[in-house]
Image (cartoon, rainbow, N blue to C red):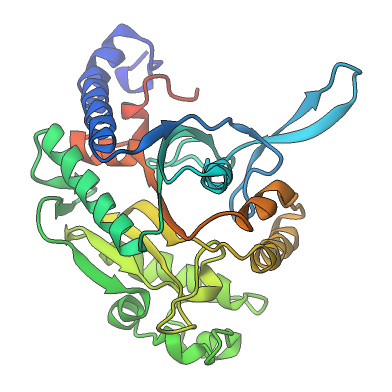
Length: 344
């Protein structure tokens, strides 16, 4: 069997992957030490949940929980530990991080795996700008631990130790797609689908929503330009694209949501967290309406989460794709190279 087609557990292929895996372990240890030095508590959130998450385009793995009497209840493997972490914040924890496996169906590319490791952390009563600085610090830590000063990915480069570029979503759309997003939102943040359609530089379908058009422009015109030369912090997402984030006090058209990019690869997604349970329920239901329209299914809303949000103090949090960061820091070319036991 050619080496490129051999199983991940073949000795020859494992020997090729082993340097990346050892770099992964070094980065893992360095990050745990980083959090410990800042008085974070590591938590271990259970993967089996009532809802896998309520974002329209995320797909969970479903199973049945069989009770002793033989009755079955539907459960899902979580797509993120977010819901469980927020319940812990409601319970009184103030600085927590979770480093563990999450599960997303329909995802398999050079940078996607159905099972992967997510690093997620939260700070109570701290602004989301602090979480952004945390994220940048951890990217630098990964680079330093892996002894690299340059990330490379498919012909693109980014210097992780250089000062990051901060770019609003609107400015990115203007610069790379010629689209003024804010002009398609009213003063309350409501989206004008037809106006965005008229500005779109990409092909769209008659039944595409504002969010569909936004996502296509982002994917086809904007993302490849982010994180080139240095890390990009993409922030102030439109409120209609930030179902879990607080609306900005400065401008209700945008929300406290950011993403971090290196070499065109998304590494992290974070928020100033929404804590209004009724507004969160409304947003979840709207997301599930979209999911049902596109995919013909919907996930339940976790009522316990909504109850916890009513108790949860103001907080900021972020999820970072640990494997992707290790991949860039170690010089790997695909995510399977940095997973100890890749999904077959």
